[in-house]
Image 1 (tube, helix red, strand yellow):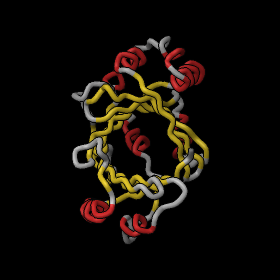
Image 2 (cartoon, helix red, strand yellow):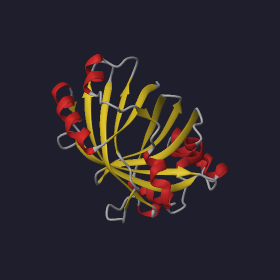
Image 3 (cartoon, rainbow, N blue to C red):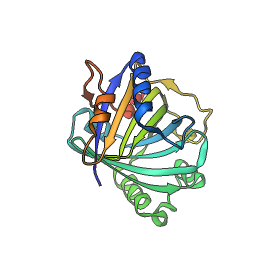
Length: 221
């Protein structure tokens, strides 16, 4: 199922205002501490940076693969494929183990053929298109949930990059600030966005953008 996804760049002053409004009508994500948690993702791309250039060139239909976990909890690792068509997005995910991920990072891929459909698809694209890990993206996320419309509003701050991709599972790996990356509000919903959320998330002078945390983190490599 495809969902709507809006991204809006915000400043530190907006964060306080949005937290106050959203906390009055939404519930915090139960998986975080007061709704906040650390996100770590490892993104893949080709030697020619096909995924990056598709994003920068505004290609209407595109996909990207990533590995993701939260905080230091390696029991909740996932391989994900995110597909976008215009403003619509769809995420497919498959659980993987820390051992499997470490094998992938070490160039041992055989397990991927029998682990699941998504792992097998990534294997085929790693073999055919030379898709490889490119950058680890770290940030802090605060998430707010609203049941009508299956709405999820997130506030992402502190975006950092790590280019030692073989240390994806190492929380002590050195990360760098991703340039002058702004804070980001993302709004995801199914068929409709309730007016109460639209009003709570409204900010004067702010419009939806095509900002990409992954693309921002590629400024150094």
